[in-house]
Length: 319
Image (tube, rainbow, N blue to C red; front, side):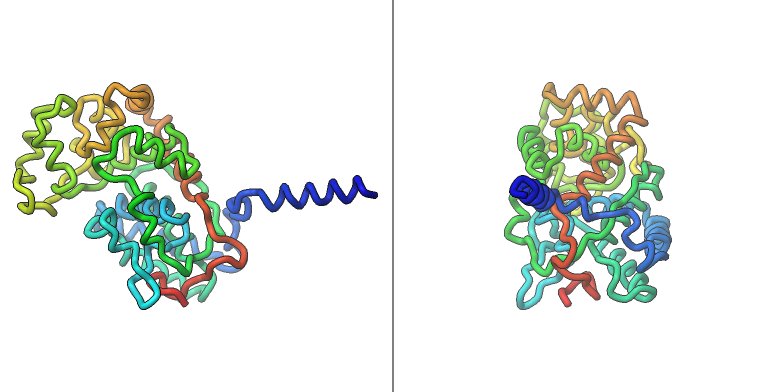
């Protein structure tokens, strides 16, 4: 009898220690909101058709959410008497975008299934659908995340990567989230689409470094003046070749020393990730597969499940 009790207790302890993502399921809304995924897909496709750049913005929005206290839609909360919004931290302010698209999607989903689908799940699905909309990979999104009732403002600076980060910092940062170096390089490949502000790459293109192609630097200088404060918000495509298509040119650019951000070029700079960049530059299918795998893992970072958190009525405010 005692041995039986011990086995039962051990089993309960094992279950208790299992990660939260085990509670997520791709079929989570099949019965409670069967049209949720189609509604999200249609809205995202419409947004990306209207502005191709939005695909990159929605993928990045999911990423910046998950890296700060988990995939809980905390990034969507506006300032209030009890909330200090993550939208206003330096790594997000005037940089992260797409909030209005998520708000629109949430409104549409609420109209068919009030109080059922979380903002955190909408972010995860929208990122996948945004990738598909620009020719990128698809993947199965596990669902059942709930929304936070708190902001991670104080954690954001320490948890989000910066455009000037070195390789060791990036490997460490992703590692603390349970993501491997391979995941980090693959996910960095999302910079095959999207744009960056002049202020984030000015130092790189005017620094006369040995890790940047001089012709590439000269081209980028045309739209990014050298003086701080002059043209800070001018935009340039992260991928000079095919800025609106999800492909592996990002990695080919790095090999040619044409990474726009310093945090991109460090992936191919004589370090431990050079071989991964080379591999992805030669095999689009390997990159696509690894990117999808990395997005699934990222979407499983510390989700709120069960009765934790809430299902917000509006993504910008707690209920």
